[in-house]
Length: 116
Image (cartoon, rainbow, N blue to C red; front, side, top):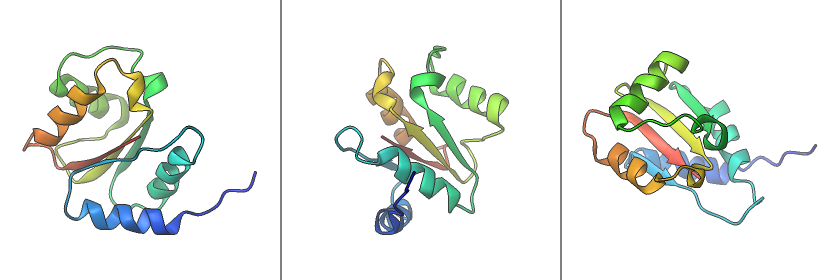
């Protein structure tokens, strides 16, 4: 398989994350959103966790605190410390907008969020 490096997108994401805590990547199916997340993850110096929401969110949680606790227990990823959380295919969750808004609005969270 040939994988094209999407350096310009990754550079743009890094610049945006200097000013924003949340990025949403949209696009048609099969255009490379997951590939961009994976390439972005490989280049990070901060802790960076990738989660495919089609698989991970089969287990429900009710609060952002519960979500953060699960990430910490299962992956050792602490959303209250600097880092980047990558949530791929977030639309598979029943309430993606609520999760994104709660995450973005919480002032205790220091890890950036990128979703597709």
